[in-house]
Amino acid sequence: MKIAAAFDHRGVKLRERVLEEIVRAGHDPIDLGTDAPEPKIDYPDKAREVGETIRTGAAERGILVCGSGAGASIAACKLDGIRAATCHDTYSAHQGVEHDDMNVLVLGGRIIGPALAMELVRVFVAARFTGEERHVRRLAKVKALETRYR
Image 1 (cartoon, rainbow, N blue to C red):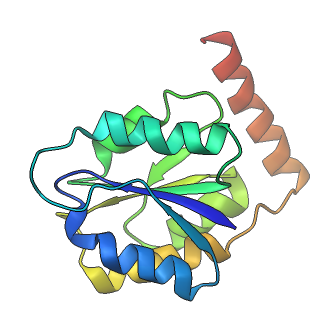
Image 2: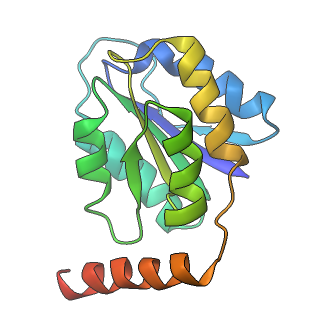
């Protein structure tokens, strides 16, 4: 699976570990940068890059890392078809995919360390949407909201 990964200036400290874990899990990272803490990079720009990469089909999923995870999640969810969530625990990282068809994992580089980030990436990329009727029904309602308020 191709996974777009992007980091703002606060998330860059987890960059190497996140990219390494994507490869270690047998997937292909699409590195959208940044690779340095300066100049400061705005998280909405990185959210747009990841979202567009998924929307065009160049990647199936994405990972965003900003300072807290909150801003990047908010920005990413503004793009049609992007279902992003900040996850700082393994249950949410896999359950978000399995039940909610989450396609973007968002991490807070100032909140979690490299070991937890690697574990979260690992469970996120391994998870698959269950396709159970109740989850499909709920996802259809989310898509209806997205369409209605576009």
